Image (tube, rainbow, N blue to C red; front, side, top):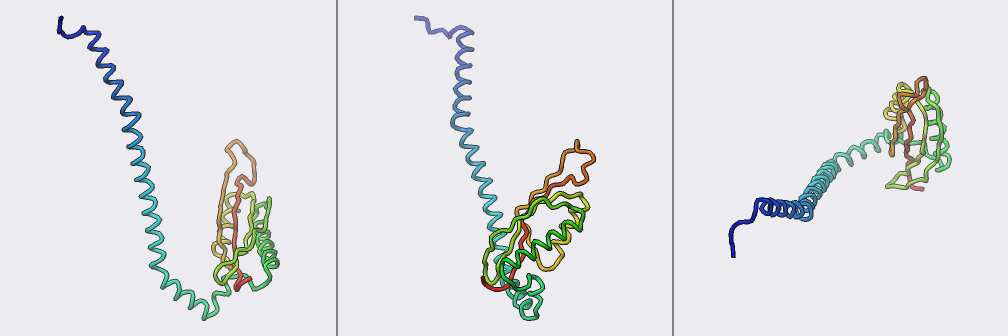
Length: 188
């Protein structure tokens, strides 16, 4: 029996099979493990960032409680909220404010929907879901008025979409959808 090495073709075939085996092991075993570690690492970083934010807010709790007590004692807290009224009346007042604000800024209101009242500790959140079309300057006016106006407003679920460049001549190229909340003192 001849124990001589195989031919060049059989050696090449053996090396090719070995490389295919390594590639299969890499794709089937090693790569999923590496991907799992990367995914777990991203999740750990995200959770650490969330923990940092929560720790930061928790560390501010004392100073925020003192500031709230000061606002309550000198009456300034009332300027941050809607005037006490029924939930329906407060929602109607908020709706009228938003209609006036949007129209006076040059934007066009598309739809408005009253959201359910959300009770919270000592306050009630009165909310509206708005959709309107605006130009850049109109949008800036609306957002500025909501940010700096009184009573205090909180925006949530903000979606801003700009029309494509092909829509030349569109006077109001930006579509905005958002939830705006203002607050009423007291419990329902």
